[in-house]
Amino acid sequence: MFKILALSIAITIVMVMYPVKVVHQIADARVNTTQLELKPRVENITLKQHLESPIINLEPRQTTWKQKERVYPQDEISCLAHNIYFEAAIESTAGKLAVAFVTHNRVVDNNFPNTYCKVIYEAAVHTTGFPKRDQCQFSWYCDGKHDTPYPGKNWEHIQGLAKWFYQSNERDHLRDITDGATHYHADYIDNPRWSKYKKRTVQIDRHIFYR
Image (cartoon, rainbow, N blue to C red):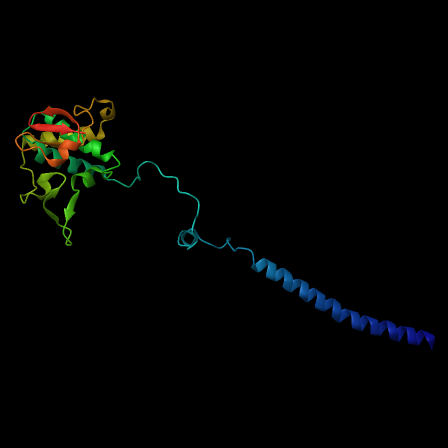
């Protein structure tokens, strides 16, 4: 009789304890699941999703003195050639190079755009995007006249000069004959208002240069 009673008590204890153990395991599993869901899931995030993420990076950006952008050499050479042609087509080679140096000096100056084309075509514009008459950095661009060079030896020479100036590894070792000028005007016009705030550097052919 005593053995039967002991066996009955043991069975009851097992039946009571087993569900408790199962409940504890389920609870532990839920806790672990919750902890796992709190971790950032980055393993399945693609590069595109990462770049489009709204997360703000509060680290300071490390930038150079001037933001770089993609440039196309052929376009840059073409812009420079047009500028030399319309600003100094009848000037000497030195006069043509002087215009090229002024254009280059602006490209590397923080106060101006950082490509040849943007420097040359910088202008006040209408809402349509067209430049306003006589409100350009280089007057030929908005003087109301055509902007197509006349074909011939002079234009071919200027194109070659522009290409050499733009591509030459020696350019940065050449002495800037304008002494760092970023501005100039023709000697047959009255001094512009801005000239009194600049230092005159040199006169080459019919242009007076300032920095």
